[in-house]
View 1 (tube, rainbow, N blue to C red):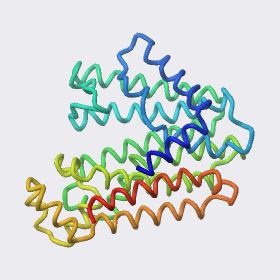
View 2 (cartoon, one colour):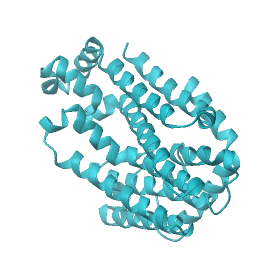
View 3 (cartoon, one colour):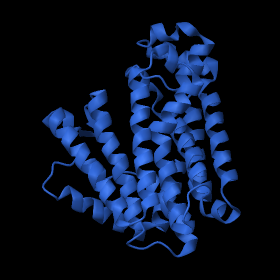
Amino acid sequence: MKSELLLKKIREKYKNYLNFLEEKIKSIVNEKILIPQFITQGKRLRALAFIIALKNHNLLNEITLNLAISIELLHASSLIHDDIIDNDEFRRESLTLNKSYGNTIAVLSGDYVFIKSLEFAKNYQNFLILEEFISTAKKMVKGEFLEEFLSIEEKLNENVYLDIIYNKTGSLFEYALACSEIVIKGNSYNLKNAGKMLGIAYQIIDDCEDLINDINKNKITLPLIYTYHYKSNVLNKLNDIEYIKRTIRESKAVEKTINLALYYLNEFEKAIDDNLKIEFEDYINYLKFRAFECNEQFS
């Protein structure tokens, strides 16, 4: 797939920085605390956003890369806790900690990874970074709360969906680019907003890719919301996957969802300067190809 080739190109371009990040994260797995191996894997899209934003400023070094590590560990801690909440059995083709060792060990592991994330953020020794970290962590918890406690009727609202994914997922991309701008300028206004747009776009695309799996888990995401507005009885037939797929195609729900993701990607591009657009070109195209590839599956 074109998206996979582009991601490989991006990772090759920044491999020295990513290798440093991976070494630091692997060292955490060796700290005699039960940490899932999946934290040593992943695309590192959030860290890459941070790294790309700093590329032309000669500010990528061991000190600033502490923030890239913090970003990825904060993400990893949320995944460990998500697996507990969702009672998931597998994460990246391996048994989750909660299934292997129980919820108590998994909670403690997630907490430890969260604390390590905070420790790496603290290493940069900037109060604004810590403020952004705390704000992001609060948003992520809020997003999880909304997803768990809102009624089905409330979650069928597009604006509610966008609020959930911004808080739960988009805020991490927001944190990544807020950190970049603090390192560059000492404040986090413009790039922080760009990160929000990027994070929302990413999660909309990711939800399209996971659509059938999410339906099997009775999880409501935007394609299902659009499908519901086309034919409301779809919620009564979630066990009939062939009917669901057929109705999704008829409603053009995935196409509408992808169009919204592309809108947010466009807002991201508008929020960054021309030099940064050049640096992010492959990254943006990677997400666009993922969106197009997903749309092809339901066209």
